[in-house]
Length: 128
Image 1 (cartoon, rainbow, N blue to C red):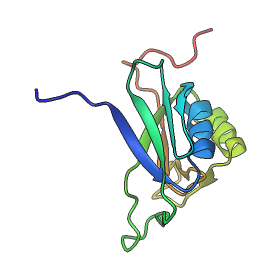
Image 2 (image 1 turned 180 degrees about the horizontal axis):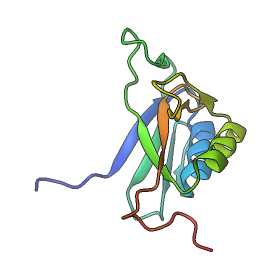
Image 3 (image 1 turned 30 degrees about the vertical axis):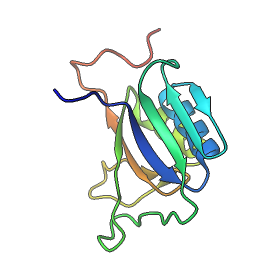
């Protein structure tokens, strides 16, 4: 091993807004912020997602290969229907996908992400 992953950095036109979106989506708090950089992570000494200001950001166009997705996140959820409503209320937009079971969305900056059903081997997302 040469190193350890620190942050996945996502370019966007509004780091504060996109960090708030993902903070709500995956339940990680904002642990650092400046004018052009925001981090969400478990705490201020763990790795997480970072959102960096990119004034010339051009969002991908799903599924247009001339405007590729750049990256995408798979977000594991307990209940697809409830999660769909929740991400749409946060400002996500549903994207066309292959098949009726597609759960592909765009975040507020246009980056695609997928909601995937929690596999049986994974612990529940929400314990009651």
